[in-house]
Amino acid sequence: MNTPANEFEIKYRNVQVTRAFRKLREPLCAYVRRKTGDVAEVEDLVQDVFEAVLTTSRLFLDDNSLTRFAYVCARNRIADYFRRNACTRKSQEFFGSFSNIPVNEADSLANCREILRLEKSALNCVGEKARIVYLMNVHWNIPARKISKRMGISVRTVQNHVFRVKDSIRSEIRQII
Image: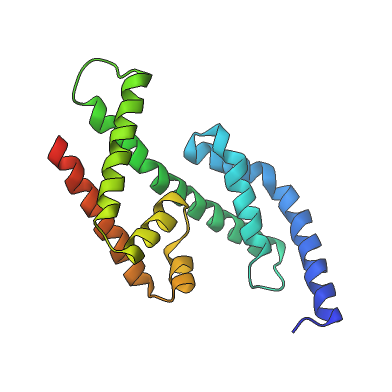
């Protein structure tokens, strides 16, 4: 229950965290830039780290623990970034390996449309719950933990639904290649 004293403590803590994070922002940006190499994503990832630090359940963090926690959050966000982008890079490498001819934008667009058509076809062959779980996880980037809470199913069930739908899409793609 939030009493006035608790609300004051929370606001005071948020001010403290914000001040400390301002000092950390530049080194964190440099760290993320160095690890990802993607200048465009740096601000978004660092903002996600700041949000995670603000919403942490710890009431008081000293500067050392805040710094450690921020870097751990940054490392986790970087890992998520690479996980999200691995599929895109692998598909580009895969389709690029079929010919020595550089793929132009029209070809890329046609490949994307074909993959989306195959994904839609595979989604029509699975159950409603699996389709919803897949869309929430893959297209809307909602973590399995949040999906499980929203839908009232276990995290493992969410992971199984996503795996089965992805496997179904892969087999659709294998049929045309």
